[in-house]
Length: 252
Image (cartoon, rainbow, N blue to C red; front, side, top):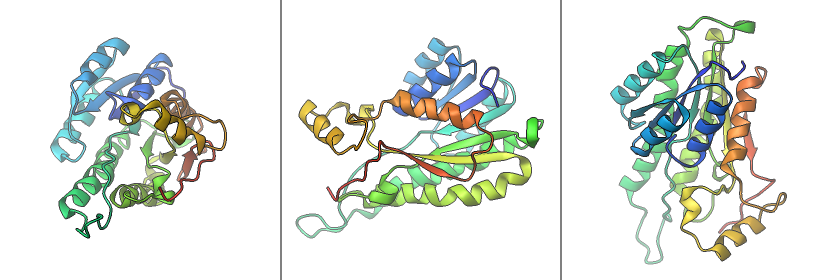
């Protein structure tokens, strides 16, 4: 598939990786629907000539409405899932208190169940579109993390949620092959997103030091460019690709 004229739905599209993806896809000629709980998504939609749907990825009705709205822009072909949270807590804290169960469940709900919710609803819509070359109808791109493989101290909930996304990738691709939908997951390393924006410069430099090459934090533009290449490479399917500068996370 080529970007010009495609309709793309981007969750978490108001900031960070999602916003960079919206800008990149829009610059390439795609029409983007930004799905986010943050009203800043409306401003970005106006900037790029797209549309905005305020929705929580864990809410079935809101996701269904967002997917339906995307369909008003044209046949939905591309879904990029960037919505997620990264709260940290240890299995036992320093006083021996166990990890809060509700916090664990909330992280799983947003990062994993939210991904599946969008996957299932979007797949149903894409499956009804006209088939393109090689019977392809679209692609769903999910976002995991290197934490799925190298979870650090305090990341037990986050790592579990992202490992779940990795685990969904191949079966989802196999499930959706008969209707011509590819499923690919990106596992980013340490990216310079608003989540890291509050850190001091020395802390950011220390994080970049662990990256093998290039010696820098990932730029959201790197993620966005990879999304575009996945969209255009119709033979990439059922795979999770680390985008991390060969980083392997230490225990802490």
